[in-house]
Image (cartoon, rainbow, N blue to C red; front, side):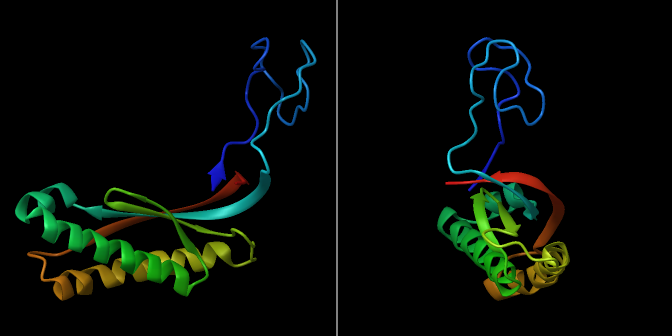
Length: 150
């Protein structure tokens, strides 16, 4: 699970904390960090189904649920195929991550490849599921430092 790093202000006195501080420079209180967190560089992939509100309005609820399950499954498969994983399902979107639990030098490259594969498979997915019109997906990719913990 991805978590925030340390607090930006002291939980005891409210004084702003410098980056990397382990103790508050004003009152000396220890700075709390998420339990069992580790700083890592990861690459995040965010895949969003375009026009899902209109699609939901045009399908009955059970059918829409099937389409969303198919979309989530397809995105998860593409992430897994390149050693990423689906970290969270957020309505009509999937948040995937590369570099957790183990980072690799090519995490960003594999994340981009998975994003391209997701976009390429979306049209075929729509046909396979019998969705009226095209299924389109937008994908964003970003690499940066996060705190990883349980």
